[in-house]
Length: 539
View 1 (tube, rainbow, N blue to C red):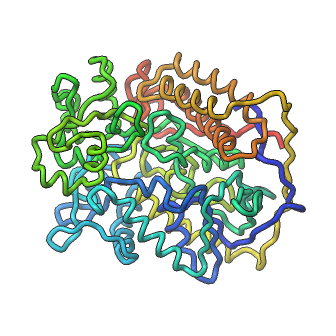
View 2 (cartoon, one colour):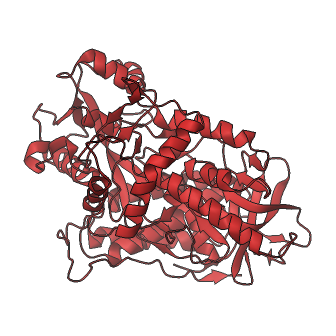
View 3 (cartoon, helix red, strand yellow):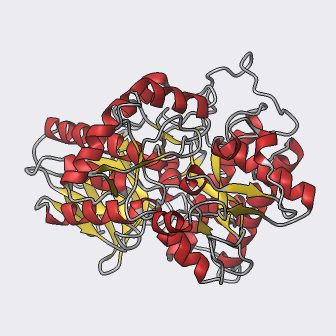
């Protein structure tokens, strides 16, 4: 990547206000709050989140949480399903760890007050694409994330050692003497502020907003990945962006996710002529993994020259459909669509970043003092393609592990908290050289759809690298004073890492499909990961 500044803003630790905490958690989704709740009450925890604490990818999760909870299912079944979806790139030990701890984490959510849907007095289980058994617990039909986060947020707010700051943008991770020692943030009242921490847990979520078509909320701009990269932490597998096959497509409206569980309950996918196309694409038909379904939809749209395909639930019991998917029903009714009779227009959209900050089985990153959990990471669980509903359980398992590890590491450090001796100076911009942040952001998101989408080629990727490289040289050396500017810089950083990784992996695997290298190549690639190179930074 072209030369950029180590920090996005100027500051001097000698003159900037400080806040001290034993453990700093960046991000208030399921991974971040699970980590905070695992820290013992005698250690202080500060959780910072860039928007409201309710605004995270976790809150928008519809499908549910995967776990082996029925006598017909086994841990080995769940492990095998995850490995198959991961297309040869999963870390089996990590998969087994997460699968075996999943039931206990689901029980913990129930103890914290999550009201999962029940059937005959037991947790109701559904099935989603790629799963061999019914093992998905859900809440309020298709509002699992909302209900789960309601309970977890209430639990975190009641913990006396946990403080939550809303509307606090983490601009960068602080480093000194080869370790992470806190963060520089923008606080709504105090402005620029340094947070000094004995240990830092990064749980800042994904980067779906790098694409124009995405299921992610506006907060998902890759801030944690970009900050970790600038701080020197290793990132890997950035070529693997998972596209959700079914995003409600009504021209001119905001995109809404249509849960995997809709197909899990028996919905069909049809083209513009009404033909069901998935059985000819894969033996699992609509229950094939997301990457298979997304590419099938992409090919169908190209073949029919139509901007979308259609979900058909008309053959299912109407009462079951409305009861099981009340949120989906409500959104569609807003567009005059009846999910029990009408064909529902859908198309793929960027959904989940499989790659991210490299972590070990305990959640340690390659940067001492920094831990990470959730979508911001590459843990080895998902491999090249995430199995549906494995993400929330990953956030729970790794969040708990990070909380335990960070607490133990904080205890092992010398008593007391000290301000790091860190400063950064960025040269002032030419006042006549203005940059339209919104226009450049939109251009980047459109380019990523065209050149770094579901199907990729070397020529398109090189074109994208050239354009993004130019934009990086133009924008990354500047100092912005607003969130939109910092988000643009983070999106550019993440986009360049994604494009470079996609060019490097000259094979097709999981969510990464190269039409010029359409086959999986185990001879040359095997279990190899693409590791993002160290940045060239200006102090």
